[in-house]
Length: 373
Image (cartoon, rainbow, N blue to C red):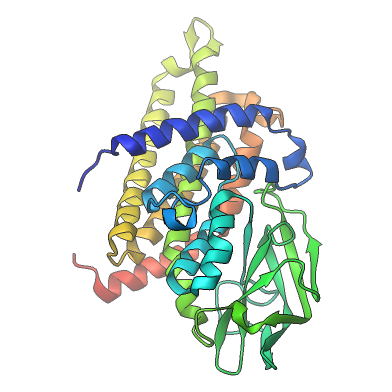
């Protein structure tokens, strides 16, 4: 295992970090307050190729892998900028199961940032389990007629293409639905965090979709989902790590300058121990994330690593944002400080993409199935 990033990866880190630092200052707080997706900024990210890290160059992407994707997600999230998580999920599914027509139609637009994707699984009574999925798709003269409701879907009303998981007579099926398809309606929600990824409920009422929008095979929707969920987890882990780094950077910067009597806050041993613990745990989370990304790129089974990565990143991020209050005191208690938003983003993402409890269940299952002690 090589613990060093390549020169190209280091250059990517510097480029994304520099871009994110500059753009975050110009990003109006209105986007967060009003829960608006910053599409213009997403297009800027796409113009640099960063919305298509895993897309082959033949389809307009970077032609890179999971580690580059993680770098992009982490460095953008450090500055509280929305990364291309949902678009990369669709890119992965298209590369694995899409027809050549679907790839040529969607991949260049996703990779350039022109298109945004949304991932529609959850329903009012269905969270992480597909077993009770209620949305249905019936065949009708070369079309699918979709009926159902999806809940808590990031970017649904902003996306150009929806990945809708349904039930057909054969079983779980994934169908690509264009946003402006008749019969699709959106209702915006008001989430606590991740507000620049607006949340919607989707209502699908006699929604008529061409049969060639089927992604993969009918009844094989689980296979389509499984091909992306490990990549999705390390993307979420990278976002949490980015949040943790940004939060810690702000807290340490404040504590370096804040004086208590003749000493700075960072001069006290108790504070130094907090810093040591936070950085040690953060680096451990980054290492398991990088190992999971490497496994994704070389095709090694990595469900255990990706689950551990999401779990550790979520726990470390929560610890860091909580301890930021110990480092900064009353400064952290005001909304004009950055910690309000870091706290809300981290708490929201702990649940999104698989809660810590689900990650623990998966980790335990993998341990009992094949782990070598």
